[in-house]
Each structure stands twice: as C-alpha cells, then as structure tokens.
Length: 181
Image (cartoon, rainbow, N blue to C red):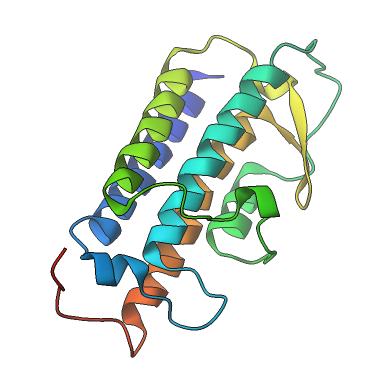
C-alpha cells in the first residue's frame, strides 16, 4: 500500500465512522428500534450489521494475506467505481443471512461493538506492510477485489448504511421526540 493509499483509506474509515456517530449516537431506544416499513432495517439493525460485516471482512483480509501474492491478477472494479457503487447503493442486494441483524447486542452495546471493529480495521490499515494490491478475494456481487479494495469497501459500506439510517430518520413515522431510554 502506498502512503497515499494508506492516507485515503484511513480518511475514508474515519469519515464514515464520524458520519455514523452523528447519525446514530444519542437516539432513544424507541428511535433505534423504529422500522419505517416491514422488512426495512432500523437504525439499531443497521449498526449491528455494520459491526458484524466489518469484523468479518477484516478477518477475511487477514486470512487472504496468508495466501501467496499474485501480482498478475487484476481487480474486477476500479477504486472510484467500487466506492461509488457501494456507497451510492447502485447495486442492491439483500444481506446474506449470516450477516443480517439478529439482535445480537443490547442497544447500549451496539456502538461499542461497531467502534471496536472499526478500531481494529483502522489499526490494521495504519500498520500493515502487506502488499494489499497483490492479494485477492472474491466478492459475491462485485467480483474479484484486491485486499486494499476490501478496506475501501468497508468504509463505503458504512456510508451506504448511513444513507439508509438517514432515510429511516427522515421517514414520516420516525419518532421525532426522543423517548425515554
């Protein structure tokens, strides 16, 4: 990873974390649980999903780096296209069952779970000396991505769900007044 790539990924990870913090912190239990329609995720479900995905992706990347590097491979997408697609919700698909929210944590545990996962990702991105561009992992929708792109995907995925949270909070039935926690 070049110095510029490291700077970009650390900025994207920090910015998406801060956006999520602004959107989700301080909400009441009622606001966290509000679903705008059947089958649509609440704020709490979005945050839970992000924590689970982030933990899983970082583990995949670390495991993927154990395989031999292959500099002959090329990613299926370029970096800007990947970010635009994921963050912009261009390609929509349901989360696999094992990544769907299940109420794994109490409301007061959601942010610490996400924040711990994001901290591990940021620490990894700041410290790794691995050639992330020469290690590849398949994405079920996006195709073959290099390990650096998987880190970009994490930040863009967070932004994707921040947009969903904005939609939940903007829906007509969202409880505007903070209810008692």
